[in-house]
Picture (cartoon, rainbow, N blue to C red):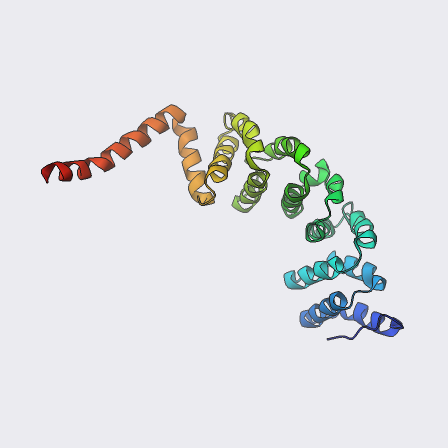
Length: 245
């Protein structure tokens, strides 16, 4: 581990900053761990700047952890600047760091532009952070905004959106009911699947999507009738056997 002396440690601070840029990811990981174990505001910029370019997931996560070890009053303003960065990883990792810090004042920084970011990783992270930080009286508005993203992206993107919506609780139901009758079958199925997950968290996402698509294809009434008929048919053998006894 790279040592840090926070009292007269300029050479040591420089050593850690340099180690954060080392070619070997294990060296960078140890440097980030050292920075968090002995937090020093002198490393703030180095940590934030490395977040924007670090290719290794585990190192990035350690960098965010190191930032949480610094005082929020100095960390939050610096991280906020990254939300407007051109580099997508800078925005995504800044959002991730805000989620780790957990300061609800950061809710005001989760803009519509971030929630609709063209980069899927940025948008997914913004949804998750927004759902975690949103004040109670803003949840409905957030649900309405997130509902505009339904049906977009691949399975990973749609799962992330459903999880963020489910995290908001029952307040999402009006927005989901409206989306469930959208003429776009992908939007309608995604909305119905999200409601299924809200009502039964044990339901797997793929199963919820399959059921939602079936309902969208058949229509709610016909789907319910077929489900009831199937249930009745499944009970028949047991009824016959009981009668025979």
